[in-house]
Image (cartoon, rainbow over all chains, first blue to last red):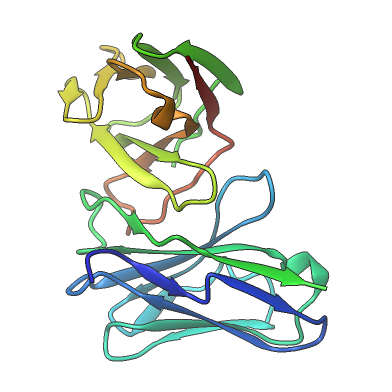
Length: 115
Length: 111
């Protein structure tokens, strides 16, 4: 596709349920990033992938959060036993490389609401 | 990465130039200045970046002071579609790419 895509665009789930969020980066982009944005707040970094490996997972808020990337392309962010404080927009971005010169291209985000 | 300071909000008249300031007084020599914007309900969009020289592209111009402690993003002819939150970010050349987004400046373009 022409840009980064994310699915679903909206997800409403009950507290305690698990959710999976998907990100399809731009074809050929090796680096992939997950951020989240709570209402009225700036972006909070979660995790970064270079290829299929994640050199830095320090932004994941708890062990309920995990992410994987397969085939150097699609990534899935999984939140187990969701809590109300997990409600946010989850944004994915990709870059051609992880080098500082590469600007990040963001997807439209997944709006997660935990009831 | 260095911190940035931006005004919380600013208004701009449609058709006029919008000048968005950013202070980054602790910037170091290997840090670039990036600007992104986020239109409501969309993901952030790259605008421009620079190191020490002024830069211009089809969207905007970036003016960086000689001491690199501050910069200004210029939207030459603001339109209503430029209403967005604008983020100024500094990022090290040693960084593997993570962006540290602050609160940004809410720009409202009015008719």
